[in-house]
Amino acid sequence: MALRNFVNEIRGLKVKELPNYIKPKLSLDYIKNSFNRGLDNYYTKYIETSSPDPLYHVCFGGMVLSYLVNLPEERRHYEHLEHERLAKAHGSAAAHH
Image (cartoon, rainbow, N blue to C red):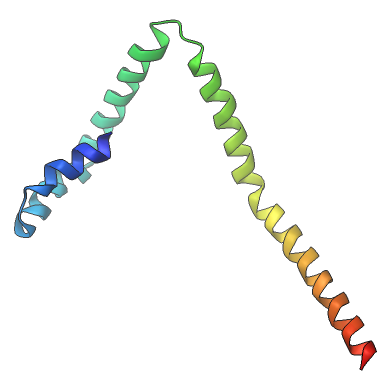
């Protein structure tokens, strides 16, 4: 939704106007204020209403984080298995010649 709003805002700008429009949005203060505004909106939407959704967010967020942390090890494991499979296939093909 925020991305759609951003695209709609810059759609009417000329290319020369774009840097002056985007530069203030990349400042540290603007980013901090946007983050705080997002936290306030989250608090209003989920915490004040006693919704169970934050519990789901923590659970699913933990699962995604765990997956991402473990991903490099899994990739190494599968690369090793693929290497072994290719070595066996190459070795058995050489034996037939």
